Image 1: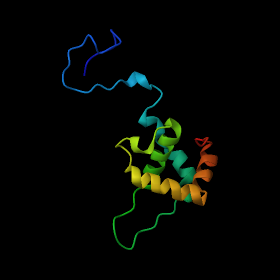
Image 2: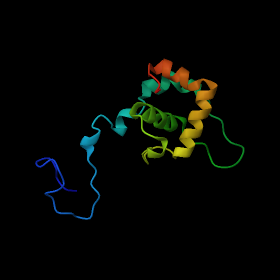
Image 3: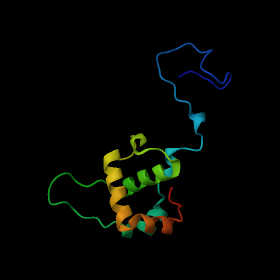
Length: 118
């Protein structure tokens, strides 16, 4: 990856075939900033009862799904831009709709003191 710290652009760097990622575009966004801590999860995990499916695929981890929802809420990114370190976008969005409709997300936001995105 080319170094842009001294020049501030890629123009003076030879092209090495790699598509560069410029972290400076949005320095406030880090995926590590959007993972619930263990104490935070302990405060809200009672809102997500674990049920085993009778058949089909095993369910995704509710904590991982909630981390993805919080990432979208805090960054303002679109659902299709969800990083690959989170569960699939379709799964996360489906749970988001369900939890929003049932009021679970509102309870989570209140318990974690998070302001929901408009």
